[in-house]
Length: 162
Image (cartoon, rainbow, N blue to C red; front, side, top):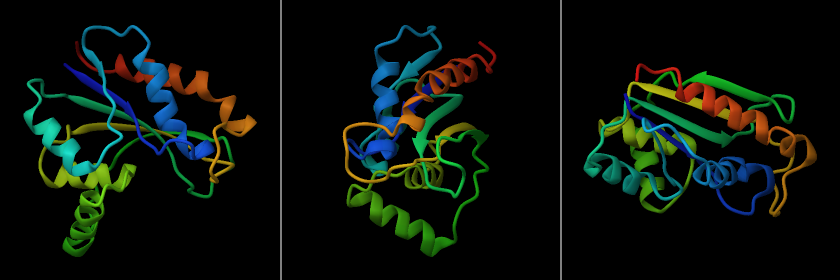
């Protein structure tokens, strides 16, 4: 069973860069042979094309990101993506945003599912940001969660039959 791991987010957007920064840290780490860490911080249409053409088909996808969902800042939430899709107009809107290069967790999931390249097993590790403004540093509450988030990723990679 193969696992694909990435972090999603824009650069230099303080806490909203959580996924992208963690991707950089995870890319420098050693992983078991069944884990592939890849930079998926480009348009979802290109990600769909990459997944479609990549010689390995992944059984599990683990994505790290930040999202403002009204939780207490610094809250780390781990959940299985439910695979719910918007209506046809919503899907088209996501594809349109993807073509223009919008990088977002939701667009990536919707576009890749729509085109049939998303594994059935998708785990999201998401942090609630405190600061969503331009900046090079995380807020202290988010910075304190980096190690914990990486440990969660490691744990999630082992939850597959190898």
